[in-house]
Structures are given as structure tokens and as C-alpha cells.
Length: 392
Image 1 (cartoon, helix red, strand yellow):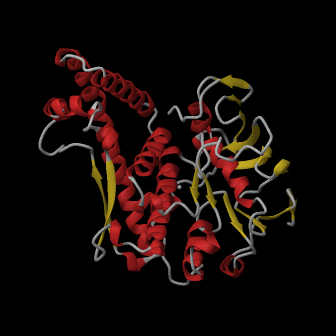
Image 2 (tube, rainbow, N blue to C red):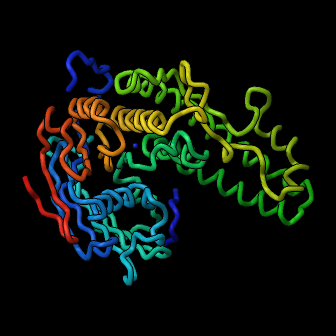
């Protein structure tokens, strides 16, 4: 049992960088079943390798299918918390079941995996490969889904929390020792904040300052190295998808003046201020990152379309990095791509995805012309009246 919190993204002449072909394997979902998820009483579909197109009118429930996948990979819907409308009205809980083939390191035929989650908005119960799981992070670590949806522009133009979560999700999947380090830092932060609120004496804070520095310094180093890897990929991808962006780099803002002093010193210097405010004002929990452009001065000057293209470049870079580090591609979900990108940018996205072995889910009110011109989807599903019909 647990709480609703994660314990723990064919144009002629376009050349794709070699690292896109670093992994030729991909996670392949063979069955997705959900019950009492928004307007669906019960529905099941059998996706295929390659591109899976899901069509339907606005409000038919296409996005709910991707939300269910996202829930299994992140512990929450990309629209927010489970209790904020994902559970069907009048129902006590939703159920999601996913069966997929994992190929990396699993032999020529791969390994079948199964995960199920019952979630009531507060209390949840999960199973993975026939065993109960004690932490939601265990489910999230098993199935990797990179999602681009109408709110993804907030990754670039919104607050810092989604950007920290983006980096930490990537590290969570590719560095096995990152989660214990993240938990250690989070636990120490809670203890220090509790002491600050209680007005504890300075000597009581010394041990937790030490613990925060011991966990926060390597945590920040991992974030730095991860963003350096992502930077190379994101710059290359953005140059293909949207060369007008002139994306040049990604810079970490670690949460304290790291170039001037160690974290332990920053905590000590901020102690009086922290005692007055009742919380810790410096450290990795305050970290952020920003994208550097050739001519655009910063995120505040971005149009919504530019923010979307930047976010998509970062998300595809994250999928590419996952493939390189893990030896197989994550599942990629693109919600309402036709409404988010114009035809030219859609073509470029489809070409890039077609060059990978990734299993892709795309939702649209009707088949995108850019998709039909370049390649035929492996499977097409139509959503209507709370049911899903396979059209091919």
C-alpha cells in the first residue's frame, strides 16, 4: 500500500546523427487494459511494434489511454494527481494493467513483463510480475514511457519543479544508485526543515547540514553529467526539428552558488535566514536548468510554439539517452500531436521516429496527413462511446 506520490519524454536530405541507432531494441507493449478510467468502464487494446495511431473526436477518451501508460511510468497522470479526475466518477478506484516485452539483455525473444495498478487517488496497490510491490517507484522503474502532451511546454516555460522531475526521472532509470541518493537527500531535507520550524538550536542542525551536503553534492554532480549528455542530443535534435530555434545548450542552476562555495558552506551561511523562514533555502531541491538559444534571450521571450518544440527536443533527447544507456528504446507517447505542431514539424518528428525501433503512440482527431505521406502506422485504433475499435 502507498500514498499518491512517486517514491522515487521522411524529409529528403535530412541526416540523422549516428547515436540514434545506438539501440535497435525497444520496449513493446502487447496489451493495455484499463477499467474505470475517466469515461472508460473497461477497455483493452493490443498495440503493435512501431507507430500506433489512436483516433477519435475531441473528448472521446484518446488521451485517457496515454494517461494510463503515463500513470504506470510516473505514478501520476500528466494532467495531475490521480484523485483529480482520472478515476471514473462514482468509482472507488481505477485499474490499469500493462503487459510488455522487454528486449534489452533478455535474449533474442525478449522477456514478458506484467504490471498492474489499482489506484483510488490516495491508497494504491500494485503488482509487478506476479508479486506485490511496496513502493510505487518499483512499477515506475519497470516501464519507461516518454510523453509529449499539450502541457509539455511547461517543461521549458513553467516553474522549476517539472524540470527537476524531468532530470531526476532520467537519472532514476539509467543510474541504479540515484534513487537511494535522492531519498537520502530528501529525508535529510525533511529533518532539517522540521528542526528549522521548531526553532532548534544551531548545534542540532549541524548533523543534518552534513547529511544534506554528503547527499546533495553527488546528486548535483549526477544532474550535471546527465544534462551534459542530454545537451549534445537536444542540440542535434532541435537542429533537425526546428533549426530556427538555434538551441545551443542546456545549463544547470544547482540551487546554490556552487562555483563559489561547497554546499556545506552555503547551508551554514544561509542558516540564520533559514531559521527565520522555517525552511531550507539553498540546495539541490532548489535546482533548475535552462536552455540557451542563439538569439532568443531566454524562456520568457519564447512563444508557445517555440517552447513546445524545445520541450519536444528535450524529451526525444531523453528517450535517445535512455536507449543508449539501457540498450532499448522506451515507449514514446505523443498526445494530440497535430494540434501541437504544424505539418512541417510533424513530418520531421515522424521521420525521426521512423528511424528508431521505438514503439510510439500518437493520438489525433483524424490521421495526420504528414504521417500518411511518410509511413503507414503499424496499428490504428478508433475511440468512440467509451470503446476502442482496432481498424488495422
